[in-house]
Length: 193
Image 1 (spheres, rainbow, N blue to C red):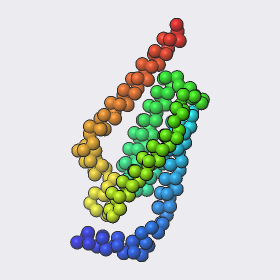
Image 2: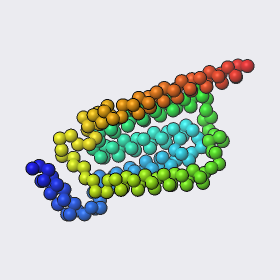
Image 3: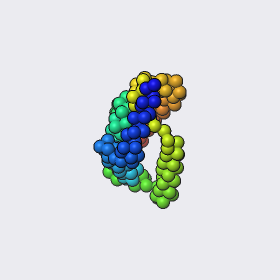
Image 4: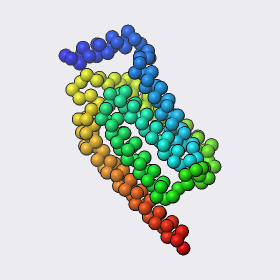
């Protein structure tokens, strides 16, 4: 009985405001999305590795804000703690251990900019098309027992379906840390000779 009234309320609000009429949240979502996209572009186009890592912090922080705007607070804090807090710190730690150049890095550019741009545009177009096609008529009600993005639903999905990829990612991060330590020790021995 509550689903019928919820659907009727949703249909009435959609008809009254229109499907694409912007509200404050949608405008903020769009602006934060543009800032996040800009930070992501700067991340992959800069030739300074430390600057790329810092712009990655901005891009990942923007994603956390987007999750907050979508009322997925748990996912937003996971984004901040795991990606901004751990992955970027590990990346910077690896850069410092391997004694990567702080300034411009000439080997950060492979010379395949046109091919990379073509692949990036094709991948972005395919992703937008797949997501738009998959969620064209989907409405997510936020007034149910356990809406998407809550801790309960996210925990059930994570520990029921995504345990192996989650653990594989932690092993990958550990391997990256061990690799950085091994590379720093080899370079230290070479410099002493």
